[in-house]
Image (cartoon, rainbow, N blue to C red; front, side):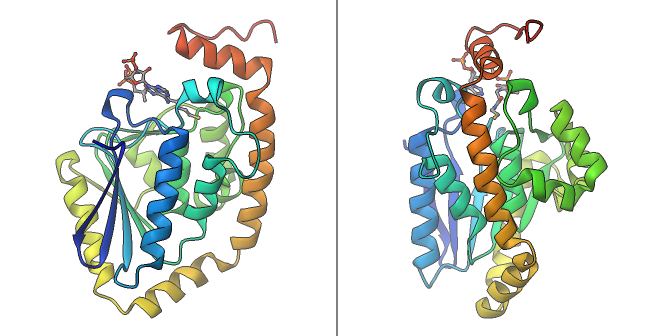
Length: 255
Ligand code: COA
């Protein structure tokens, strides 16, 4: 079975599901490319009115595959992860996400580009960039202070600790918290509600909601991307990523 599963549960809904449960749905270069192709195709398909993004039953995604960061790191603006961020941040049609279990790294930051997010009561979120010697990505250094306020954004991005769905809702990352077992069904139902509405009006509303920070978002995604690529080559990141692969605690004492 593919690591990205595509389906059309209704005529108007394009459903994308991460499907790499053995690796907590960690995203590889190939998965980013498949995600972009699927989103582009659904954007171009006039019958699709809403995109839905789900993980597997108990995991949204553990973020970028950390082994890939060591073996196959992004090189420039054209890399698959940056292509994915450009795609997801410029969708015309609404994007609904349903989060169960962990949503780590880009698993959390991509929620800033979703229009509606349904989370399970035991979902957890984390932007562990400083813990990995990296830096914010996906426009999060701009969008998180806007949605969470600068104080909470600093806490979440500087410590890089995991946080629960209640805190994610306070940070403006989540619309509603529901029982874990109902996340996928409720996310689909929220998408169906949007798909009943006039699509021209829905798409214009989405565009206007984002218009005041859309161009700045793209500049920030690019700037963060350049820093992120540099950080991946740093000794700090190498220590953190190697420690993950070796299943040990990183040692930052020499930096
Ligand atoms: N990249 C590559 N492999 C990953 C991964 C990632 N981001 N996240 C999890 N995995 C792998 C683990 O190495 C493990 O593989 P193994 O069974 O071959 O040893 C498997 O997925 C299961 O993960 P595990 O850590 O045992 O699950 P858990 O339920 O105890 O913890 C997480 C789940 C998400 C909290 C934990 O896996 C984690 O912190 N992952 C890294 C998240 C991260 O830093 N992402 C990048 C942000 S930029």
